[in-house]
Image 1 (tube, rainbow, N blue to C red):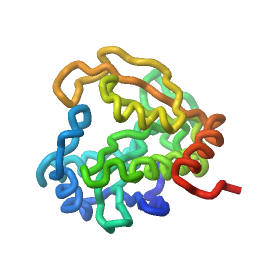
Image 2 (image 1 turned 60 degrees about the vertical axis):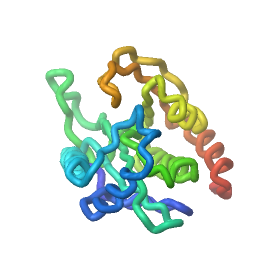
Image 3 (image 1 turned 45 degrees about the vertical axis):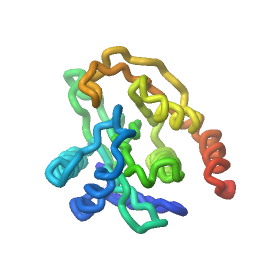
Length: 214
């Protein structure tokens, strides 16, 4: 199971999600919620506490690594995100097919999801740097083969942000899940492969204004 980790950048610090972030997350989610049409964001203290508890339960099973997003400009937690749907390809194949295999120390593939920000942190570069920190950890520390990102096919804002990373559109899965607006959601699936990460990293460095890595 992946260890707890803090990922630090220039303006963002991703901290292990815990109930210590509850009040800040409630405050962030209580700002203008008009951009949450296609994103499930808890509202109120009880929903947020349940949200955190569920994420920590999945972490204990080795299925997710959830973060609170701290914006260093304000020194406040302004949202949440996670590395999730962690799969472990090490060891013998499980039987019967479809059952969970032995959970290793690091995953072989991962998704980035459950990302949301309070309205005051949107459009500030916080999301972009958060994605950079998680992608760097996944590809350079875990050495995963693939990172997947998904969005409601109607969520043009999220899809544009994913495409700006340089992710590849794998396709649209129709009737994929229940949407945040209680409709049947079609989901756009994107991926970045380990072989593509150096080019994506260079592109993100340029967008973030970072010096090139050695």
